[in-house]
Image (cartoon, rainbow, N blue to C red; front, side, top):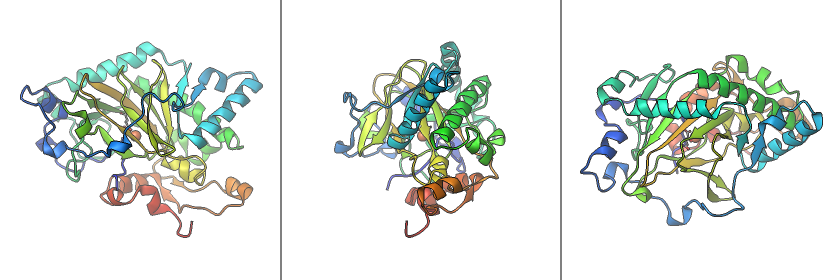
Length: 344
Ligand SMILES: O=C(O)CCC(=O)C(=O)O
Ligand SMILES: [Fe+2]
């Protein structure tokens, strides 16, 4: 079973003992993937980069927030379909300057290029520390080390990203036939957790034998992601891995586990993974947005009543859910399955 994990990892182990993947990849002597990093992919399980039918839907943010009700209604419908059929979509015309996005990627690159000694200060053990960096996922429990380093931090970019996420959440609420602020209110969005996680994937001499991030779902409500000019994100759609090609300056957005719980499985938290390549470093910046930590997530009663369904999940606070997802238990069974009501 693939490990279930998130971009917001626990760092319980002593990561300072393990060199960053950058240090390893930079070493002139490296010509193959060391055994601790060797990740076996099923050859039939490769992403299909050239299948034109397999590209994630595009949501035009300008139309989603349009003052013309017809334009907005049409985009809300498209958003609902994207959440239901893909769990992933690309957001264009969102108003966050491309220069700010590029500056963010550059700043992260500069951070990863700092001497290891300087980065050590941020290798903390605590899940919710405001700035932390490290390598792999959790080196204390990883069975295979990941071909990536990460940095988590909060900045101006996060504010602008949050504004886009808030509008997407309103659109999702409406696509479910609810008031636009229904989910935000139910999830205490104004106190909700937002994390910025930058991932650094250096070129790898044998990309088929390593993995940046293995298949996982994200734990929050929605995640917004940007990347430099290298692709590598793959999304599981209709049992096939689809390579995500995003337009420059767009956000890639995906539904997370809390949204799947709220919608009683209508909107799916989709499995995705980050592959690596042998030509250039890839940087991605994922910004997961979740409920307030003390807020329990449960299927929305109005939706259950309307669909004549019973709740498929028991409630759990977001904080407990994140702890569960960072624990070894999530390596065995995907987190959502721990909360699933039996007989469903
Ligand atoms: O690098 C990517 O494209 C994927 C990152 C991701 O899935 C995550 O940080 O949760
Ligand atoms: Fe993810």
